[in-house]
Length: 227
Image (cartoon, rainbow, N blue to C red; front, side, top):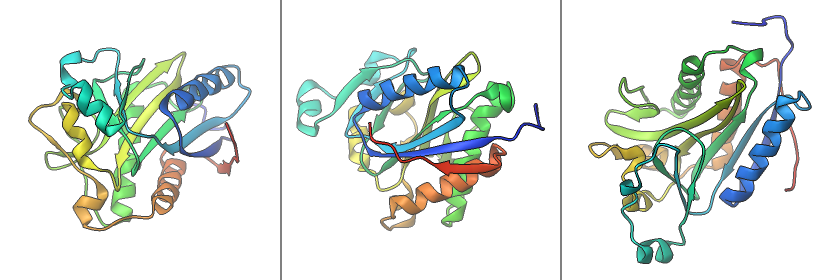
């Protein structure tokens, strides 16, 4: 670990259900503030309306839903600047956007990805679900079923974008894409695997607890914010 003597706070902001573009612009503003050391590390947790996002290396052919499908489901499509291919965001899915300065933790993108996975693995374990990593594909899995997608951007050791963790997600909405460009795997959710509907807030609380532990924060502060 680098800089072990630094006292590190984590700000937590719950944005509820928020349009993808609004949240993306907010991320960018937080990135600039974190870069200039105006705020501590910040974790946004939220849900989006139905959205497909294509990472900077995405294959456009992995968007297989036609215009009628997109319109009927109210799905917006965005080309964005994270890594990875195409994914779905929507209600019942917890999206996490960490704006972290890895220079005050560890300058190691691989370890950062594995640590994000570990946050979700521990959270699933908190609710009685055993999950694993996949040696070939980033994210969190149950056998060949992905429960959490991860796509990040790191610039000047400040992170953006993050994870999409399926909780009570309508999995039929993945039918308009080849998720993450992986044709031979399925997607799943915490609700489907455990056959119940979850209180999203309880899952968020577990994510915050595990992020505090895994990223070695001394304190978590909840920030109330309207944007």
